[in-house]
Image (cartoon, rainbow, N blue to C red; front, top):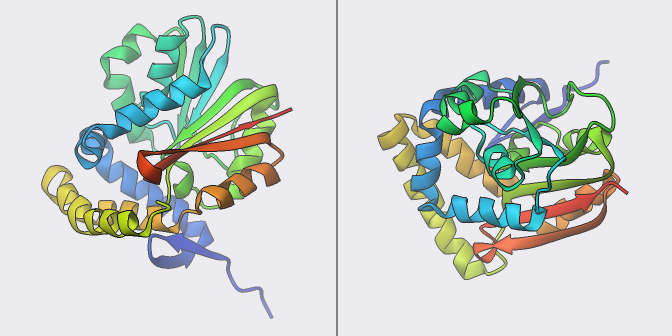
Length: 249
């Protein structure tokens, strides 16, 4: 007798756990060159407001060391360093082509002495314990194969007194608004992906992955289970997205 292979979800599909990372890598490799443009189109620019709200709550300070996981093209790191010119940041992503796109941005050259780009896995971070003051992950944690492992790693690499902040799509508490949002997501976003990025399937997956992500209270409980304290969340745009904050005490 052998143990059955562990499975997880990839959008609506059930897939072997050891295959999900490669499938996610394929999605983001395909969309890397159009990722920033699609973010603006899909959200009608609202993702920028959400990221600014993240910075408002985070309140970056000079001297802090940020780790931005699944940081892609650097949106969060750029905002963090803009608000704290004396801070440093490391952007980590499993998809090298996303980091390549980030390095092409004008801000990257200006911040080269304070900004590092690292290819790595959120579930096995290539950093020592107690290395960072702030850990952020924006629209990335729902793509991690084992979310609990990523949160455990976040706790490990943060210094005592360090802060975790997660920006992620979430669930609308109003059923009517959720119904309208679902109609938009399933019918419009994949078609935008086809027209703009020439990739309908990747954006179909992204929509489906949002629906599989835990609701706000459930995700807050997962953060507490990883060891974080003073865990709170704030809904953005009626709950289309949410910010979760926790502290390593």
